[in-house]
Image (cartoon, rainbow, N blue to C red; front, side, top):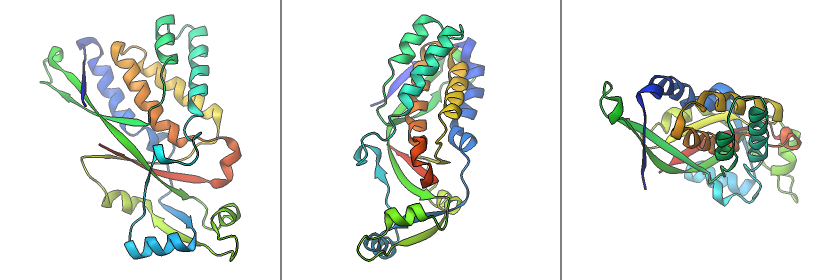
Length: 239
């Protein structure tokens, strides 16, 4: 289903500047390296070679049900801090603090003539998000330990050119996000605060922008205890 939202003359110019930054939020804040490594067990390696495909997993099918959930407590913390500092009001705090993740990414486009602000609409199309995971380290003891067969101690490490793959899958019908996973809560809180400051003046559009941001960033933050994974992720948002 699609939902539309009006945009006023007063917030249009600022919003469009923000949108350009927002579209590349993951790449800008969590820049990945081009060459990465996909650790896998022998059977999975054979399937990849035979099919010539790397499979992505729908976020909703992750075995780890805590995946992505770490961002909400952090976000509510920064909402409290922004309220205490007078950067958002009580109603904004209430609206923002009530946001929940649904692991959807909303594609949107603007309709109407550029000089007719009152006719502009933001049209959203929700997309499911699918993830493929890689490692920065080409010889990680941690990854070998976790992705080798226990009995035979055998496993494989596939070298992948992410920039090349991103170009190959370029498609206007879905969005591809590639970025390094963040294990630093303070850094993530800083990003969240900057984002809310940007959109706090967007009126009715504020909540939809923030929810869209949280659904994306939630897949690029993990607890510090997982930092040995040195993970880089490719996320596809597919209608």
